[in-house]
Length: 183
Image 1: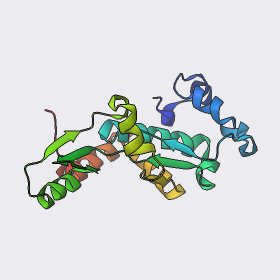
Image 2: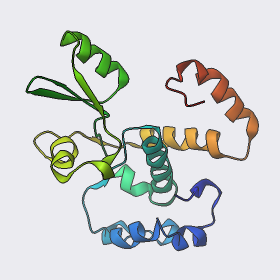
Image 3: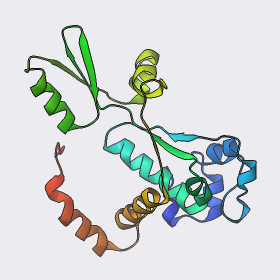
Image 4: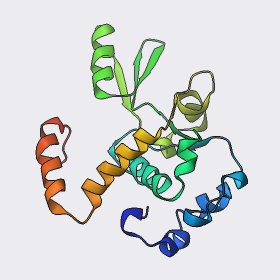
């Protein structure tokens, strides 16, 4: 995914990951953006529930914030919320979205459970993907607001921008929250 924070508009148009999005939406970008040409009411960002998926969501939110902000302002951008784990005990199963929810559910069930970590959306079979992320009766979509996109943009600027000092400070301030490090 292209870091739009550092890219010129011609690079965005030429990017093999973003060009299909721009074409599918039909609105153009930047100064050429025209919301009346929008082909879809809901634009749903679906990414894995792990940190890599979070990074991709941030990149896409920054793209929409920088080049198509009216899509956010008018409530067209959503985030799908796939689960990170499936916990099974007997014939029952529960999908949970965070490590904290996993721990609470295991405790609630009294332990002795099977825990499956979803590797990612691409590794789910079609039934799992429907059941966990797409079924309108069970799915969770979050509408993105300008405040959400602005926060994602600020975070992206700190972590991927030119200045080192804000990135260092962010890492120092948030290092205590890091878990499951692969060192």
